[in-house]
Amino acid sequence: MIAFGLDTDIDYTFVNEFSEEKIFLNKFMNLSTEFIQENSAIITLNDSDTYRPDKIAFDVYGDDMYYPCILAANSIGSIFSFKPERLNYECYIPNLDFIKNYMK
Image (cartoon, rainbow, N blue to C red; front, side):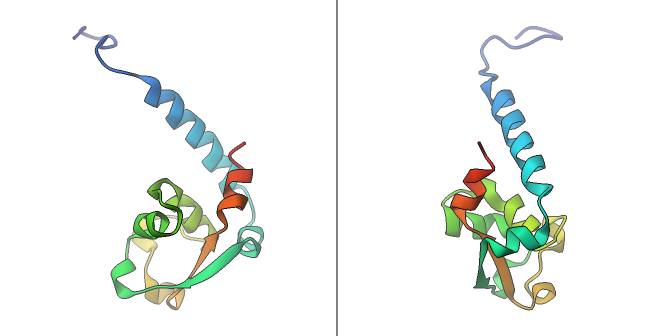
């Protein structure tokens, strides 16, 4: 390990992946909620889904990285505000093709 520098034994490619993900999320989050909802399906939530948009993203898309898209579709700013009763037990889930269109 190198003091005050990059560790040569660690793969730092994740930094670029995070940067690309952040750019995509900023682009997606700037879309209007109504536009996202027009390109979404609605699912029924259970009490066990409280604070778990990541679980829903994994169940729907097979990857939990899409959970911010679910938050955006439902006008929620934090996983701590993701509560089924707040959403009347219904949740907008953006279509994967719609999401991928904004990942380009």
